[in-house]
Length: 188
Image (cartoon, rainbow, N blue to C red; front, top):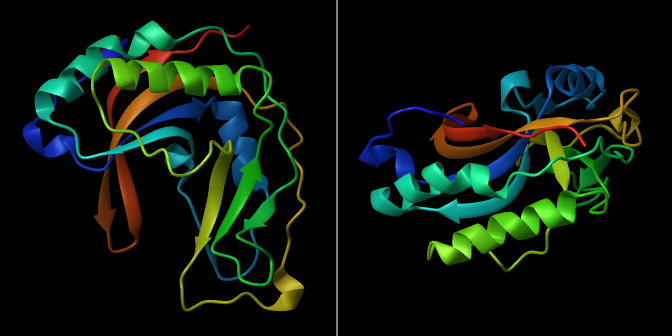
């Protein structure tokens, strides 16, 4: 597991995510997103498994230390065609959804068990909907109907190679993610 020295300011807006391998990131970056959408930077593409919010530094350090304990081999995944969320008429996001089978639901459950065991908060008001966000629309931007491009399909079979604990900092041009700890995910 790779880990960097964290400071107290790192433990705000924390989340745990699976990070796609380089070939999958490149394939995701090649998908069309539609006019008016702001693409997520290539190095920030991920699948969130759990959003934690603010974490006490001592608990965050324990989580970073124990993150690798939930890692198990994960096979390549089945991606669905890209979609606009919440819908094409009023899009906020362009996403690539995934089926929860084939190991993703189990991975998410192990992460939640780890968090519960450490006494960490978990956002439980939304069910796990595995997806990677490709782009975001500004609240004031509505794409022209002819630029709606949902339904694009990945050519590659996606693989996730890292489980990462991130902190998120809001910036003028979107959130920036900083890795606090990560563990390699072996292929199945």
